[in-house]
Amino acid sequence: MTSLIKKVVDKIYVFLFPDAIGQFSATYRYKLLIVLLSMFMFSSAAFTFVFFQQ
Image (cartoon, rainbow, N blue to C red; front, side, top):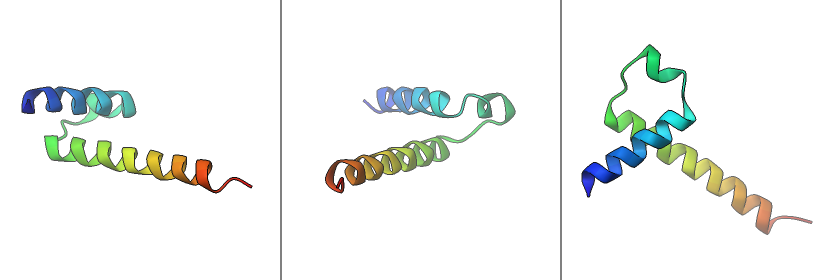
């Protein structure tokens, strides 16, 4: 299960930052942090958009 999660995080990271892959080799924790941060930002923006429309 952990390897599946690592593959998913890697694919999301590659989708989010395609230029960064060729420039440096990021650790798994850094990739996970970026993915979780982007998911949090997207969900908070969606929450704001849906519930605070006037």
